[in-house]
Length: 448
Ligand code: XLS
Ligand code: CA
Ligand code: CA
Image (cartoon, rainbow, N blue to C red; front, side):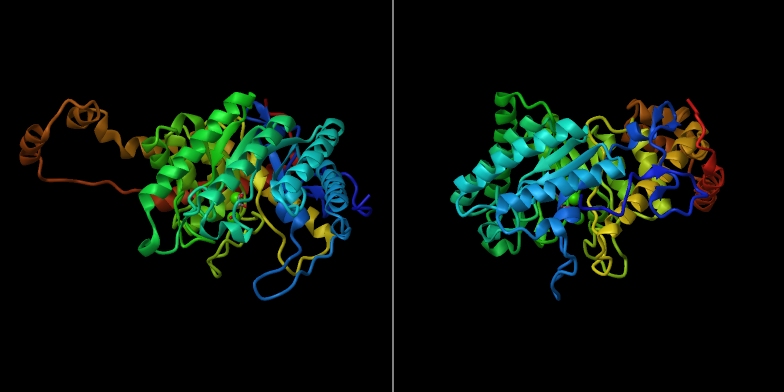
């Protein structure tokens, strides 16, 4: 046992002062026809929770986890997996996510790395069988090792491309073995530093071929999980190809890959791209490309990818509003791609952080569901676009007009009146629902 002082985390309601209890996340409570557990599909990220030690570019690690003290890679990896499953079970999350290098260190050769991965994949499979915790997604880390200095699937070096392909092949075998619901691509080194040394066309074509080969191999081995691409505009690379949802969708469309992928959207990546999280979710949903999310938040005062645990209730409401409007998660879920701050180095902080994140999204779910149920925001939108329900507007909407007809119409109707957008009123409505939901929270009532 690694977390001796922590028992099972239960729902105790908003009146509870127990720091080891959920105040809002009540897994079995029904919200709009489904339980919270079914809606939210929470996952713990292996890398931030079990691998990270708090080091930053200016300082050494501050977190000394018992499970990382062993020296042999496999001993360490197994201790880490045991601590991880103890954590998942105590927290009551249904899923976890990992990169290949998170579950076991790389060996001296690729062959040795694969042998380690095979052993750890069997080990995790056994743990999953007894615990009922499932794999939301796995991925290959193709950004940490110096070999990826020029990228992986967009590297100028074909040997690196082949190496990365081998890692993805192994990643898909593991995904298949463990029954992963999704397989993720995040291209932290897929981009460029300067156009002066970059053949962008070749790099993009190579990236498309890489994705296509992954789809083909998955089909060959019978892996039926969903492929996800996670956009991010920059960091570590100056300009990343999967910049944001719109860019990634356009790329997939250009190379005829769209049917095989959906997006894994991260809140902090949206803000780095100059978008709100809800913008990214809306764009993905419009194209039926919303797959899964990495829940976290950035810090406006810092401006980089700080990966903080989500505690901003307002943002969680707006995110859940988009997700519910899009029909909710299918293969996806809410992965906490978030890390405790460097000074929050105690093992118990990992629980406090996840409890905070899960409660935040539970509130988001409840409020968003109520807003949708009551159609609280719909009327303003309906009224705002009313001009397209009749007359010339309807002709525009139905494609029954042309520039000549519109010009003739405009000449007769050049005294234009606009209506207010009512932004502040809508924000106050969201606040009212949020505050009312918090007031009602202790009830935990069945609402199916
Ligand atoms: C880094 C990314 C990464 C992906 C998985 O910024 O968020 O952690 O989620 O490789
Ligand atoms: Ca992420
Ligand atoms: Ca991130």
